[in-house]
Amino acid sequence: MFSFSEIALLFFIYSFLGWCVEVAFVAVTAGKVTNRGFLNGPVCPIYGCGMIGVLLALLPVEKNIWLLFLGGMVICSAVELFGGWILDKIFHMRWWDYSDEKFNIGGYVCLAFSFMWGMAVVFAVKFVHHPIMAVVKKIPFQIQVIIVVVCGVVFVVDMIVTLKNLIGINKSLGQLDKLAESLHAVGDQLKDVVGNSAITVAEKAEEGMEILDEKTADSREKIAAATESSREKIAAATENSRERIAGVREESAERIAKQLKELEEKRDAIMESLQKNVKHRLNTPPTLNKSGKSINIVEYIKDYKNKNTKTND
Image (cartoon, rainbow, N blue to C red; front, side):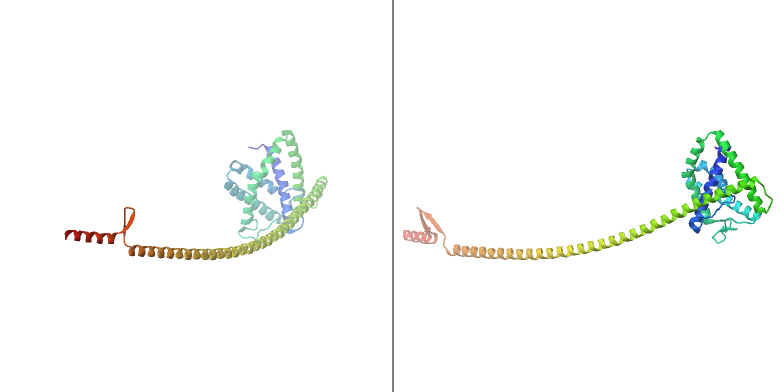
């Protein structure tokens, strides 16, 4: 999967990036800039070891987020536990202590940071490693070897001088001590750049959040005022609508009542006219039209009977 030179380059790259993360994290959380490295130079080998272990073990399953997350938790926690234990037992020094955290093991590891390592591994593998690997692949093999040799020599010298100081050996190592001092100076310069940049970014982010909170509060007030105004307008419009509806309803009721009254008067007039017509027809005897003359049928029948009676006599 990787050549030896690529693994060595990735080790140094991630050791440096881990050192930057440590310096930035402490600068933001503690508000002070300190060199968090075990060595004089700007590297944290524990990060390099952790990422190499992650890449070799988990890169084949990088598409499975859960395996990547859980594997990252286990591998990084194991490296952190082993490294913390070695530093504590051999050199009687602790570069980190999780004793106050819940679910910790000897203060070397804890559940909260193991969870963070899992998320960090997912982020690093998904978004950081592939661009870095693309750059590494473009470096010719001979150049890779030269870089690895130079970084390896500097790393070994730094390790020797650091171990000498930790053990308490006062014997000078000549040029090795000078090289370590130069590395320490470089580390201090980078520490100031990384730490102060992290603090500045954090302050800017905090200012941005405060401005955002203020704008959010103003927006909420404006929205509340607009909502209240809308409610008042809606209430006023509703009241006006109710009054208009009531007025229209009253006018309609009056109009309907008037029309009903007119209809009743017309009905009464028609009924009265019909009654008069019926009475008139009932009181008027029926007539018969004979030779252009209107003859009362009742009188005609009487005359007819009288004539028949006389004839019979």
